[in-house]
Amino acid sequence: MIGLSTAAEVRAAEVRAAEDVLLARTREGALMRRAATGLATVCLRRLGRAHGVRVTVLVGGGNNGGDALFAGAHLAARGARVTAVLLDPGRAHPAGLAALRRAGGRVTGPEGPDGLDRADLVLDGIVGIGGRGGLRPAAAALAERAATGPGLTVAVDVPSGVDADTGAVEGAAFPVLHTVTFGAVKPGLVVGDGRGYAGTVHLVDIGLGPHLAPPRAHQLTDADVAAHLQPPEPGDDKYSRGVVGVVAGSATYPGAAVLCTGAALRTRAGLVRYAGTAGDGVRAAWPEAIVTDGRPADAGRVQAWVAGPGMGTDDDARSVLAEVLATDLPVVVDADALTMAAREPALVRGRDAPTVLTPHDREFERFGVPVDADRVGSARRLAAELGAVVLLKGDATVVAAPDGTAYVNATGTSELATAGTGDVLAGILGALLATGTPAAETAAAAAHLHGRTGQLAAERGPLIAGDLVRRLPETVGRVREPGTGGLRDSEA
Ligand SMILES: NC(=O)C1=CN([C@@H]2O[C@H](COP(=O)(O)OP(=O)(O)OC[C@H]3O[C@@H](n4cnc5c(N)ncnc54)[C@H](OP(=O)(O)O)[C@@H]3O)[C@@H](O)[C@H]2O)[C@@H](O)CC1
Ligand SMILES: [K+]
View 1 (cartoon, rainbow, N blue to C red):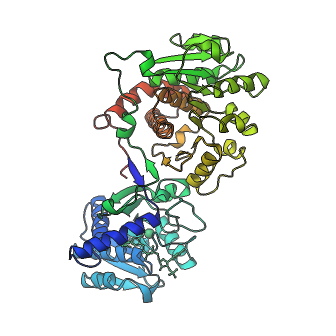
View 2: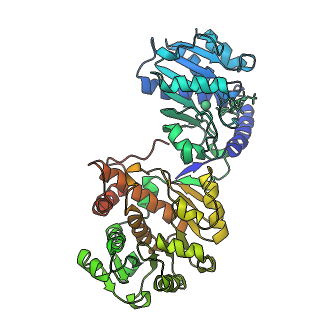
View 3: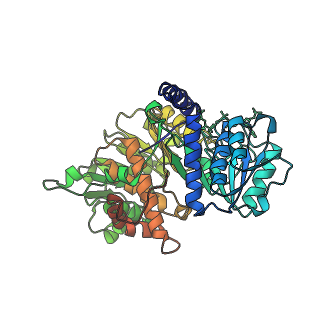
């Protein structure tokens, strides 16, 4: 599991680590030197060589600029032709500046010859976790030229102009191909608009680990999700594997029920029971499912329910949803069930068993809580308000629990923005919840698996929701063996 730490958490750890470093009688500034060495190493790996490479380093007036100057010095010492552009010449990090000059780097002001039009590499050391708001005009102009220029763009710690805690971008920011971040991955690199600005995220260990407070937000890896997808063991029966019940679809529109039931079946080969008016369609598509045309209570014993996809919002649908929510079982509330729950939040609020709501932005806002640029914060607010787990769909899907624990998904792909993929996610989630694992992490695992399946299906071209169902078993197999399957965790 990758911890996502806020700027304040990182700063507190930096203070404690610096005290440690001093006690150990190592040099002052050791953290910055570790950061700069890690940064230069990532750049060298990307470039493949240093000698003769043209590097422009954009340097702000804080420690982020200091990191960039020390990294520039490393590269210059290996033969790179480095130009440092000081945005705030009077406040550039003195030791970093001296190191760069000693290594043979050139230094100029914001108006000077910056070499951006011919650079092989541009380091963005304008501003890091100390930044506020969008970039100021001089910085914004340089960032725009760098982003459209020929050089490989690498952000130091955080892409300048991106809020490290939330991913919000309020004005101009610097979109880069790579971000080399120090000590801990910041949430703003993996969620909201910031995710699109950060490119590939590389984490450099500067020794903050033992000093960091336990993070409140996380990102799952394939290995974490594999724990939710264990193969059956001798002695397992259908109930120990988890039985899921589905209420979805309608006689006229059975598609959502077929996709949701299929996804549940394909995620875990336990048992899926379906109750509702799309029974004929479900029987025809999935003879393995146990189908009743009656009410949820007629379906037989289950360990979790999925309610909503394509079920409608009329009085019958409302009474079916109320019946499911009145059980003491985990329930996934999706699609039409979200519309009904937003009208009547008491249906969800009073529950003791876990409830997972799976809204996209418009469905979310029907609950009267806006989705703002801080998507994790927004999901936390609705989760606390309803006492339910909220899975807010997006490029990076966010899961929040009522106690504030949150997860940001790393496997999202824009190929998933097509009809029916939400029905598939609901089925995956129901199948995993039926095993009784904690709801928030389970919801994050479902989002991860859904995204991985999308990535796999998209390798063959544009995908439709049915492709996800077909590729699920193969994805489960690959996630169980992350070292051999050819699907990599993000570099973070
Ligand atoms: N602490 C440690 O031990 C370690 C810290 N490390 C590194 O330090 C970084 C944090 O450094 P930091 O605290 O000095 O702040 P930083 O991100 O450089 O920003 C301040 C500067 O930005 C400016 N500025 C602000 N907003 C702006 C805007 N919108 N547009 C333009 N400019 C703006 C602001 O100007 P001012 O507001 O003061 O006029 C000031 O000049 C961290 O991200 C990591 O890289 C690592 O070396 C590991 C060890
Ligand atoms: K930066």
